[in-house]
Length: 246
Image (cartoon, rainbow, N blue to C red):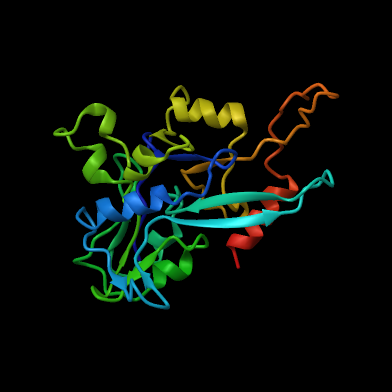
């Protein structure tokens, strides 16, 4: 089985704001476009113009209608999902060939296609459903955090971010070093009580989610209430964890 590196000081990853994600799928589409010609290319499409479309997508967006605890109208939450680049990545430790590995220099989890035998053990070990099997290539593929963009010195510095981050119209996706407590993404997590997805699994995801803020009544007869982020263990987050683990 494959070993994980020691502690990585640099932890590149994403912070996703569930409060403002509009479910437009721009992140998924731009991810698909970039990576079809990028590090893990090609990304197979099966029956793209007919019924039962399928294929390899590194970003998938799930939309849920969630019952609110305050008795008001239900709310819709759009939940983008991709590889979380876990610190204790089970997808790596179950790999029998070393194809799945975690980089010591930045904490990114990758797949070496030359070593992958398509056994799918990594996909069974991942509780987040972030692994994609490419039927045409016979290997597992996954989000690379766009390593061919973030380290590409031919691009302007402002463009050296993952494709999903560069295209989000609502600015719901943020990229940076979550190993640096002074980084913008780390401060955002601290201020908004960002949380790990399914922390009880113990995989310590690098990517974090920012919970939706409570909705307030801003009618003329009522003054707006102060908006405070809910605790990570609230009902909505527990519900999302259950839904994604099915």
